Image 1 (cartoon, rainbow, N blue to C red):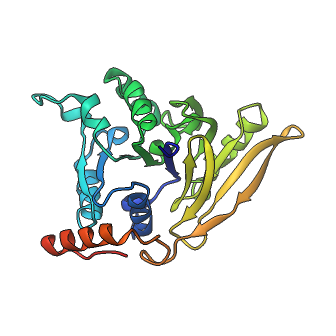
Image 2 (image 1 turned 180 degrees about the vertical axis):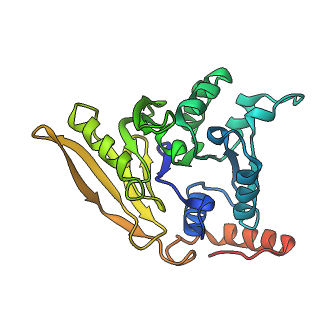
Length: 263
């Protein structure tokens, strides 16, 4: 079995205007399935219907089976959360309040279920709070001012998001690393880091100037160095072609649904 995969994005994705469509296609390529099951967790923003609608608008035309799991609306549902989440191929976590999301996850035992899913080969991904949650620490603005809070700790490093878009967050993160926070990465909106196990494999971007940065303590200060970032280009240009048999299945599914198949 290949090493467990995490794809952590700084922000953007299908929630931005225009959307970072190449990231959605990149994410689907991380699952070795013709039609991967993709489950969206919008917990961090309180399960807003607008995010759910935009998720389906982005993923329904693609070769996958997309659904959202709304923890705020479980009343009356006979659903085994562990069984349901372990049956997915990709779990996509949205942005919002990192602190609030983790508190709700603990109540539903997702803080135990999600690491188990990762260990079983389910691809974990997300943006903003849905990125920082996989790390040992993230920098949240849930309380108004930037603050370091613990995440699930699957990746033994720290993470900060919206790197270029929110200078106050970036400054606070650099100060925390200079003060002894474990090294980590800052990531722009439209960019993401792919990990195999706990090792960084590559940084990719759906925007020409979006990138990722390595942040670590040097001589009592935070040293920031750009990470080589592969630009995905137009939505279809840099996606690795799936095997022919998978291509055929995806074309058939797209034809049935009247959607456009991507290569």
